[in-house]
Structures are given as structure tokens and as C-alpha cells.
Image: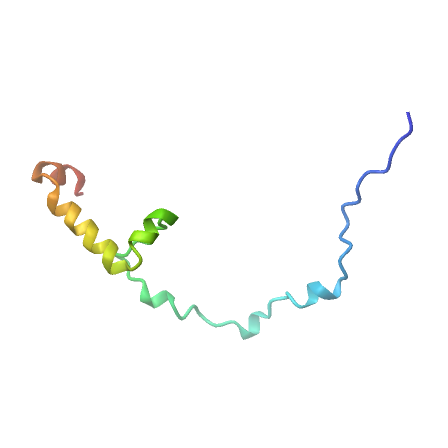
Amino acid sequence: MKKTRGISHQSTAPNDLRLGYRFDYRKSRPNRFAGRIGRNRVVVLLDPDISEVFSTPASVNRALRALISALPKRAMAKTVH
């Protein structure tokens, strides 16, 4: 059987493209948004179908508070640490 050449793993893109993506750490700054999230906040990713209904953080909080108030007191005592 005749040996065939394998696919080359070297990039065929010009090297000058890579120069544009070099990060200059001397120009870096601290994250200006980091202070907005407090220690008691949790970030949750919503599924697309849920995000169609709850489009703002306030609407999510309102729904969760309603759910919490509907829970029996016994169930809340078990879940709260």
C-alpha cells in the first residue's frame, strides 16, 4: 500500500496576524466592574426560555421572593444554613 501524506498541523495563516493579539501588560488596568458585585451576590445563567420571561434582575428577584414566601416554614428551616 502506498503511504499518503498526513495533514500538516502547522498553521497556514500568516504570522503577522498573531502580532495583533499580543497583550501589553503595561497598559492593563484593574477590572472596573469588579466592585459592583458584592460578596453576597450570586451570578446565575438563565436558560434562553427562562430569560424570555425574566428579562431583568428585578423580575427574577420578585419571582424568587414569591416562591420563598410560598414555601412552608418547615421546608425553609431545613434549607437555610
